[in-house]
Amino acid sequence: MIEVWLFRLLVLGAVVAFGIQIANRVRLVVRAKNNLRLDRLPARLRRVLFEVVFQSKTIAAKPVVGTAHALVFWGFVAFGGYTTVEFLAGLGMADWTEAGWFHAYERLLVPFAWAVLAGITVLSVRRGLFRPAVLSLSGRVSKESLLIG
Image 1 (tube, rainbow, N blue to C red):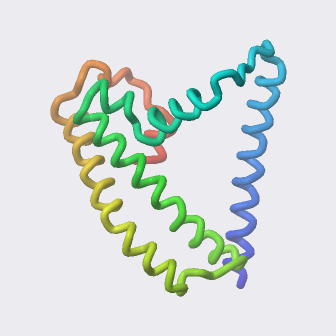
Image 2 (cartoon, rainbow, N blue to C red):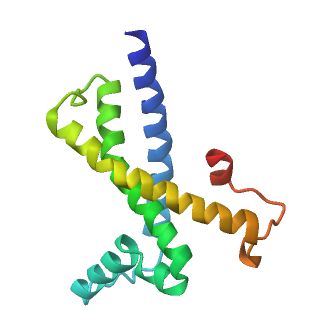
């Protein structure tokens, strides 16, 4: 039971750190010039759907790389549900890991796992073998790159 409480404490720390980052961004938005436009809302939502969810702009710019990026993106979105269920179980809040629907969801994730693997392989080969100028090493490593490994 100690490991559950330790996990809860770590998650609480992560939530607090996230909350601090969100608070900083909210302060920036509040201080910014009030030019929020809500006109053409259906067109804007459609643009978000196509450019963010379907990655249309990325795929149009560079079809192979854009498709690989989209596969990785969609895979991570699909695995968000799995991660949420596992976190809830780990926190002792709800354990749906043995539910029939969750086992079906796990099976539905298999193609997404293969898609992520294919996308990461394409992107790795592109970065490692072809080294596009835009991805040249600048001597700096992002925090995200350190987390990924």
